[in-house]
Picture 1: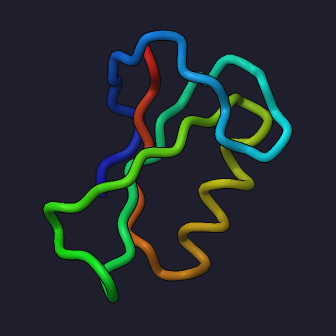
Picture 2: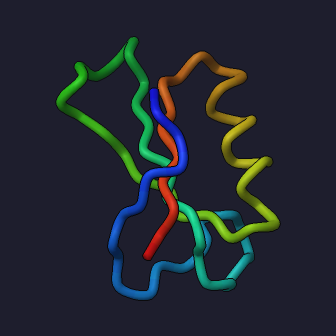
Length: 70
């Protein structure tokens, strides 16, 4: 999947547990063993937690697209 496209969300907050930082990134992902391509989940990520959240998803083989929040 493509990386670094932009999305527009109104003041998203990082999805990492305990983090309340403003998100700079949105991770669009799905679990292909459970859902088809039409079902996409969204996790918001601050700069600090982007690598951790993306690594968590990709280590499990989940398709994951990263987009910058405008």
